[in-house]
Amino acid sequence: MKKYLLFLSLLCFKGIYLNCQKSISINKFTDTLTFDAPVLKPVVPMVTEVSGIAVSKANPGYLWAQEDSGNSPDLILLSQEGAISKRIKLQDAINRDWEDMAIAADQVYLGDIGDNNLSYSDYSIYHFTEPNSSIDVIRDYKVIRFKYSDGAHDAEAFLVDPEKKDIYIITKRDNPSRIYKLKYPQSYSSMNTASYIGSLTYSGVVSASISADAKSVIVKTYVGLRLYRKMKGDEDIATILSGNFTELPYRLEPQGEAVTFASDGSGYYTLSEKGFSKSVNLYFYRKK
Image (cartoon, rainbow, N blue to C red):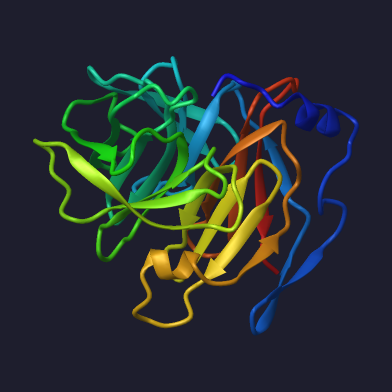
């Protein structure tokens, strides 16, 4: 996304942050979670327009990242210490406006779902087996093409149910943000339809992540993180997102568009586009 949020950048330059100076306790429905102040790791070399991240399963100690509109169609391997290890290109893919990513089991999903001007009639999600670090080019991938049941939408977040394999897309600019579902099995040869199933109570969603145990979901806006929890074993993602949430600690970033849970449940990562900042930093919020 090319539109930088100037007021957020200015806040960061002035050192005005949300929940960043000390350990913070929050109520999580029936118990309390406590997080340390986030650990900051500069991303080197700098990647300026990261819009989605996911913790790698095939490469322990690393995350995957991707950039948005107009950038190379690359999967970026990023160490948890902030070092860029390599870029792996999706051969012949087009990065029209990649906005989020997810890993379910050993499968990667890359969402070409952005539409700032509501000018597209359909959207795509690239789907392939997660590569290891020895791969240079991804040639074997499938594309899930879809349209919404009610016209164009701008979205920057989606979730994949790790058990049912349904895909949930959360729009950004609708007020409030709307949730659409691509029911499994998705077709790779014909157009899929994403059906409206509900709304959140707020707008401006820019990323989302589901925990490895599928019991928690984080939904991110530019100014905050909301944690949802599964209350019953048979709840799907739509039901989880219709329930209560609690605010998580978040240090305001220049244009923070990416969040993911740590694979071991020890905390969560956030990463921002560069915006007007002089650096790009990977943040980790560790649970005490």
